Length: 244
Ligand SMILES: *Cc1c(COP(=O)(O)O)cnc(C)c1O
Image (cartoon, rainbow, N blue to C red; front, side, top):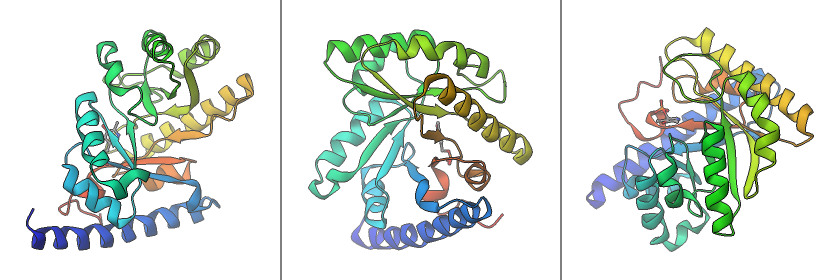
């Protein structure tokens, strides 16, 4: 970007962030919650490091990527900008076992532990590197065939074995809601919260992180208890229709 384009993008980023926080605040108030309980993760998968730096200047501190290689590329870009040392980068997408090494030590939190097989593989790699990987279980609450993740029942069954794995720090659960169906999205978010409450009771652990809500439905997610919304288009895309 030219310096002029960058200034325009910075101004867009700041205005857009104010609108997002306003909407988030409304949703939190509706639910009798505080907006400060909700982390806004900016999903940077479609933009470059320049746009990420612009988002950082606007106030975002948590970013998310869905591909290991792009996660590494963004991590290197961010590391080259000393002021951004407080930026955090999460892995939010499908993770193949042969890519785990690219993510451990780079991702602050892995949202997408979608099977027992993957949990075991992450554990093994983390132990080999003397690291602890913070993770969420990805749960397919809506039951759509196209979505990956544990069913709620499988998540309950996986809890004990997952907690028995070294090198993993289980912090909560994540889901992707059905698109273009606010009622179904709400049901998925409340189902995720109920599952978390069950897992919490079963384990005695806080399991504080409820990662749910994207550009189209984050208000609903916050009303239903989300503590971390993953926002891509609404943060970075000036063409995203904010007022529909
Ligand atoms: C892309 C992506 C998002 C962000 O989606 P938007 O609709 O652009 O907000 C959130 N979560 C995951 C896992 C994604 O891959």
